[in-house]
Length: 342
Ligand code: ATP
Ligand code: MG
Image (cartoon, rainbow, N blue to C red; front, side, top):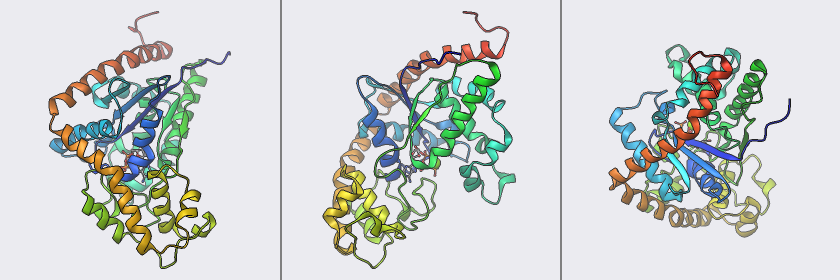
């Protein structure tokens, strides 16, 4: 079989489950903007179907979807250059996910650490959707034949599963139809940790608001959260290996590096020897200077609800134009009668 050449195409998504935070920004959104290049097709999705795998109040879900769209645009995504839409409006995602539910194996899904973390001890009471989440995520990506997926480090395992699903589908049906997607996990902050606990990632769903910096936090709140962030009593080292076994210190250095577009090594060369009493205000000032313009633009856009809805509707139309023929071909490969031939 000859190897199909797939056109480079970027896809990624964020859940509209509220509390868009610094980890989402540095690990995902800022990277989405970097990949918005003239020679690259970029598709970015507000994954509302993923959000409802845990309970969402309907009014809040609608608000969070629009707010996330405002965040995408405020961070630098341009609806003329990237396709921006919400997942539920392109039914091909859910349709392809069903096919993938029949490709993926129970054992693969049971190994997913996100499932284990989110379902916790109460798996019997978790939604079936939460368990099937990675199969829908594979469909999100593969219904566009996306080749590159920028995500934070926590999504690495789901992207490996996406590759496994593509490989098994291609193998089972004897085709070379789905691309084997490349995860793009890059930058100084691929895993921003909680400000309260250096062993836990910063999350929308963390019950403690002090654990994260929200993209909607004002300057005082950002400064307060950084001031109160857990650290250790040592001064900052001048070299990277001095951060070994110091997860909280490493986290703040990584955040500083990602916000200032430097490597952690460069940051340490500048701040090595400083105490946190001196470093934290520097970090707070940097964070406010980078985040304040985004949050004020988000707030402005939230006053233009009709405009946001129109951007989403147009984006869904453009997305469907790509997804529908790929789903159609999938149905033909699988042997579903009624599929339009050729
Ligand atoms: P939840 O806790 O509800 O799962 P979340 O904060 O993990 O929310 P998602 O919508 O699941 O947010 O993830 C959106 C994107 O942000 C993904 O690419 C994910 O890898 C990235 N991301 C999430 N948290 C972090 C983090 N702490 N550091 C870096 N990237 C992150
Ligand atoms: Mg998540």
